[in-house]
Image 1: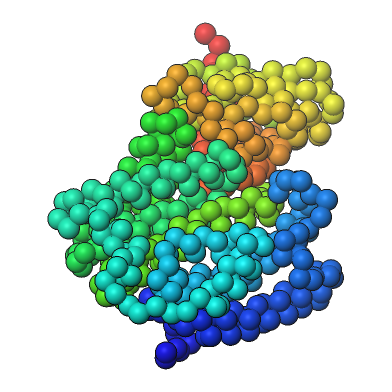
Image 2 (image 1 turned 180 degrees about the horizontal axis):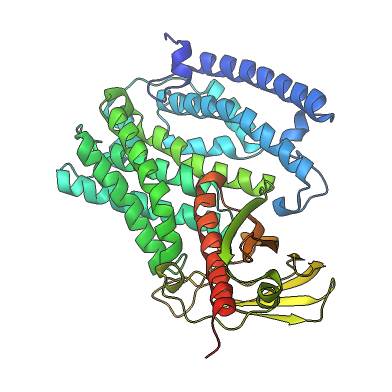
Length: 462
């Protein structure tokens, strides 16, 4: 039986028992020595044969892993991925050549049993090909996905949206991860899978593939809203990144579904693609990257001296209800500010529509600088939803204000330039994309306060 290096990556075809056993033993030897080198020289720790079953000790839950242990496990996982893929591909080929059900490939992932499974496949003889042996995962998908254009589109969208809803729930509800897995890997995977399933029986046009890809992500968003997983506002902010990535995935799926070789190995390709999303989500959850501290500054000129402006900065009166669509859509907005005490150590409360910010004063340089930290903060928004109230995890601890200040600078004409500054973090990735939204929101919050202070100071007595 002829076998090439390229066959290590393609799930189609067959492999005999001798080739399977030889590649398995050589692959394990290469992987074990690579793992041992990385563990020894990269992390200064030992690595033996039993480390594959107990990679770290004295840890009951993954969420309790120290940062260094999490980095080590993530590194070992990344190193294992190509070997896992080769192992799965060879096992599928070997099961096919032995005329055994392809579903037995799941035993490859069971500790201890996978060793016995490997030995069994290394001795089971090959069986001749016949019609019954050719019934594979592709035939199962062919039975699920209709041949008609409309039917295949409907099934591909419904199937990928359902899987996407499950994976998004895993990331949001179980792992509390709002990052690359949820906002990048998931829409790309859904777009690719939707286009690939749509063209399973016959190649479809690029435009049609892009349509089913974007529709799949849109349907998943509607399901997240319907099942109270997320609200309208968060979904609206995710659309500008999710739909283009779904379209890119759809374009890749369009190219894949035009290749006959892909159709033969579609189940394996799509299964590997599905594993990508939870793999990224779990890695993010384990590593817990530290968010960067961002700063937003906004300023306004006021026709009054610094002393008059200072009085309003320390504690300003109630602001009229907002007219801006941003705040009316659910984003928290400032209402008034109160002060308890004077000087450093005083406590300022800036009351928002969702609750108060508690701001201990650090610098009281009247009438020049008021600087404060933030010891408690309310949710950043109230989500729109068909339900009375929902509590998605991103409302708590994902947009954190570290502190702020008001700087008053006298102008030559006797007025004052008032500058408001906020230092904050957000636990959303890609950081650069979500910073566009958070910077814009914080700037609008600044301007709501600064314009109110200006109006109060410049108001003439009646």
